[in-house]
View 1: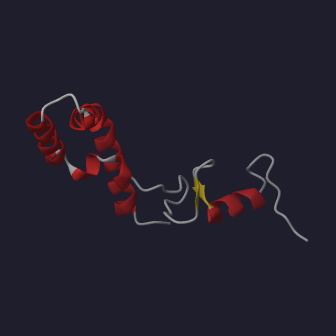
View 2: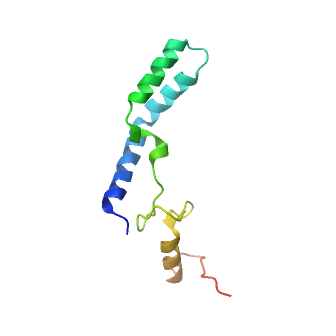
View 3: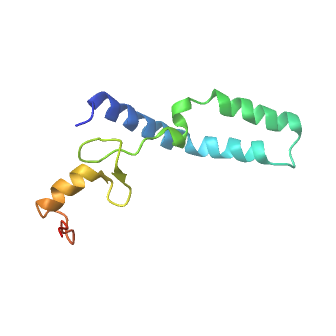
Amino acid sequence: MAKKSAVEKNKARERLVSKYAAKRASLKAMAKDESLSLEERFKARLKLAELPRNSASIRIRNRCEVTGRPRGYYRKLKMSRISLRELGSHGKIPGLVKSSW
């Protein structure tokens, strides 16, 4: 089980990303827009830099829904390889059979 503080910190980042998503997208569009003047684009970049760092979607870490483990994460199932194997062995994931040869 991962540290509870790390899991909660990641959840706080997710909330910040959803809160600032629209503002961040509009500022990025303004900064990339070639039709605007150089000063307007620079101001958009400055406003973008003033936003909280944790409001960037790149700062979110994929974590296992079951244990909170950050490594060995399967995106499709939203869980780590260890919990996947454990739940699969107990037959709790439909269609998953532990392989042996």
